[in-house]
Length: 398
Image 1 (tube, rainbow, N blue to C red):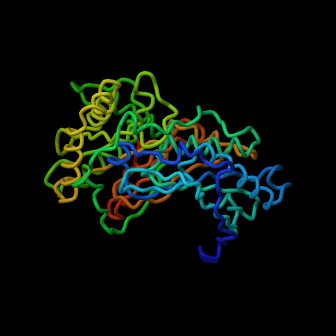
Image 2 (image 1 turned 60 degrees about the vertical axis):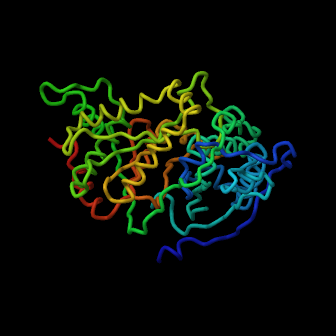
Image 3 (image 1 turned 180 degrees about the vertical axis):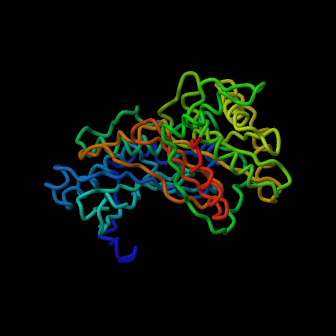
């Protein structure tokens, strides 16, 4: 049976908020960070749930209705997600138009790879990146799951705040735009850095060559990112400049006081450059760490006042990459988000993953369910994937 016959669309409906959005909240302004950093595409994530007594004993029609009702409740709290995005004037029209809810049946078992024949359930979430970042999307899913469990709209997060534009007002961005994505044949590969592989990488970062500066207590995200970055450096000698990396930084915990409930793209893209054509692994880990630690409360507050320099830097970076003078690899980490706590009433997910991305050399980092490992989802050219797969298999082998 081919893939098309495995999946059957059962229904498509529009779910509206359970209560109308007040007239005083009908328009939400996009922030300067939404304008500047959000790529013009959707990044879906999927939550997989194994069958248990609650999903086997209750028919799929009842579960579907529970999900629809609770989605309606969650959209009342997260009302911009039921509106219309208008990037030309940097606003969201909170018109209560609703969100599309698609129901499908998958003719296979969840253990082999919506409603599965085995009773398992997969819930996919897809929202415009121009409106949400990872933290915003997780907060929405948490609210939806809480409503589905019968615990109201409020989950484990504080109610969302939609005033990011108050701190980062929209700017005149004429002449600047996210670079047009080239139509290239990309593949998405998943690499699981388990405890053993991460231990080998951390050891290499801590105990570098004699005379080198060691990195104390490297994190799993730092070493996994540096390993993949080193691969792209070694695989990109044809370009004029040394390949660079960028990492998405969640700004919520880095401001004082923290702003954990802010909805929108409260993120920054930090560019990190290697010091040579063939850097040591521990050097890349160190550069990754030092670069990310620069993003603190003072840095963020300065950006809110003096944004021209950052816009100029990001524009030059995009131009170099677009012209082929520089190769880059980017990372977005969900490793600290509580995605494995999202319980709709039939238990916690057994697996959470992204899907493919239309942007080349972009890596999503997910924490494994046990909390010890890292799953790296790498979107790249097929020629790059073959070499990375070989090096990954050799990682940790003495």
